[in-house]
Figure 1 (tube, rainbow, N blue to C red):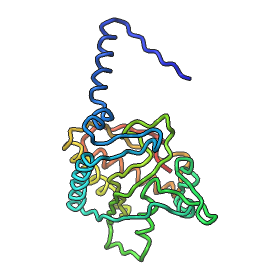
Figure 2 (cartoon, rainbow, N blue to C red):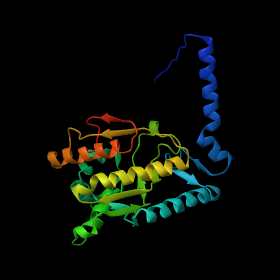
Figure 3 (tube, rainbow, N blue to C red):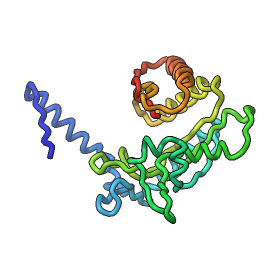
Length: 246
């Protein structure tokens, strides 16, 4: 069992901290969601999975309608991919070796299967399902599919850390020389949506990890275009060396 303690140099600072904690309780989305009958969680029947009420779904659907409209304006096409896959697709994508502990697996007719934790492999299957021409690029696929991730019970925190969720997820298939423009457009997309709701955020570039797949030279060239796209925003950003996904 862990015990945490916080000390303050003065009574004034302690009072300020306690007030901040009280204010945080008032703003806690879990309390507000239950109070306004929008959503709730049950730690016994399905921890980390949200129960959306009719009131909550009205807001949820309006947000999804907004994102669908924005996707259309920005040249994205909405698709739908399966919720379960055999282990083979994750072995090919690299998720099996690098992410398996965070996935929900089960047995189907003696074979290993998983609930999808992300849409990447499915979108790659869609892109590779037929011969493609460079004239089709960039191809932007968007998906509101249900995802499941095996998060540790101690990390679950309302809607901010869950095991079952949907996200306005998209993947862009493009040529190497289109990376900068596509990332710049994606960042503009983020800025527009976040500013609409008054969200504040920071920017960071996570570079190639030690355990990475693919061609190192291609990684380096792609990272350079990401740097240029971030510089083009005119906003400050930080570098997280080696913190990128495989």
